[in-house]
Image (cartoon, rainbow, N blue to C red):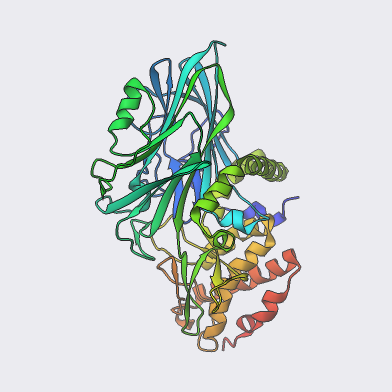
Length: 481
């Protein structure tokens, strides 16, 4: 059963009305949400809208289907012939769009995995997009698919120069793009300036790819055909003829696409966090998935191959969450379905390396960003408190990983700082601490301290692990006089 405190989760939801499948369109529909710097939303009803970052900046992501020589757009904002969206379903892990494109119905699913029992899977900042289709008239049709992304995913400065490459092998093809001169641990307009975007799919005889200028996008729209399997190497600014990274598939004459066509999209930063332990030392921390994979290619390949299992795990988790939420109300179930991905997508799960250069898999810390505002706060105590029941529900150990990153820093500042920090700083992903709250701001200081004590106790009770309280009991008993 769902734990009672989950009734009070707000998850910073901006969507105040939502009717599943039919009814009112929410403020935005989640497409891909996996980390503080990787989220994408569909901003309006129907097709014809570019996906956006949470702050409404466009993230180029396009999908076409060409049927008997007629091209329909099922994702993106190019002018032209759009597929008709007639149903939207939102679950805790998936957004499912059902569309009609001429004589075919399409189902396009955006899956942002939530993996409560596997830190490697959960910390891998990739999502799936997959498509199935069937002819409504029962006849055979000539069908081709096309999709691409732009370099808008890697910087908030659309005038910055980017580079890119494509890696094909027998099992997989993936594009990647990044700033020509990355700026570690920095943001512009809330987007990371040290990120690499990847777009991937399994290799197959009927799949082709191409990178470079967007002219072949228009060529596919007008005449279809296969892409050239070539890389355009005219590196330039993001907004200079909009470099794109594309895949297409030619199915020939078919009546349906029953086996899902799967693409993987990811935004990766490494290192992920600059952490100050509170004693003056700092460490660079990486996403936990690196403890298992030595190359990004290996990680993407495993992600693609795991799709059938990941899809089944997502369906089972959706069923468990919605069943528990329905015990409260249908409105509450809709709220949870819209907001769980936001809550999980606000965190980075990290590990450190020891002096020997080996991964320390027992040193797990989770960090939260105040996504949705421009403050860049790290582990804001009131945000943690609001989201805490979700972490306790999914895996109480996660709650401990989040608390530990704050408590370790706070313990190192005692006795000079006798109140809980309101956050670990305001320059995410730099987490060096914040000692600005003293008795001169007592109201906020008391709230932060109370939140931390309540969360520590809740974690101990839910997990059965009292080691965190024992290790940092000094934080709770510090002299406030």
